[in-house]
Length: 74
Image 1: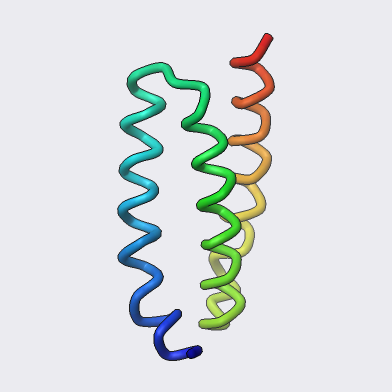
Image 2 (image 1 turned 30 degrees about the vertical axis):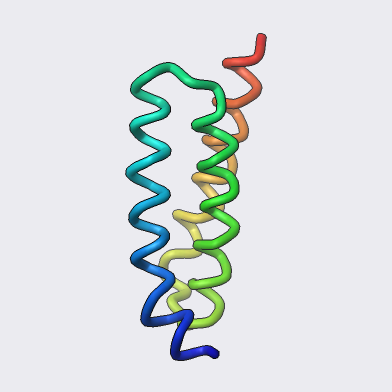
C-alpha cells in the first residue's frame, strides 16, 4: 500500500491542485475547501514518503487556504 501511495498519489495531488487554481481563478469560494482537502492528501503523502522537507509548505498552505476561505466568506 505504501508503494502505491508514494507512486500514484502525486498524480492525484497534481490534478486536484490544478483544479483548485482553476476554481480560484474563477473566483469560486469552493477553491479553498478543495485546497484544504488537497493539503490533507499532501500530508498523507509527506508522511508516507518521509518527505519531511515539504512539511513547512504543507503547514503554510493549510493556513493560507483557511485564511482565504474565511476572507472570501465575509
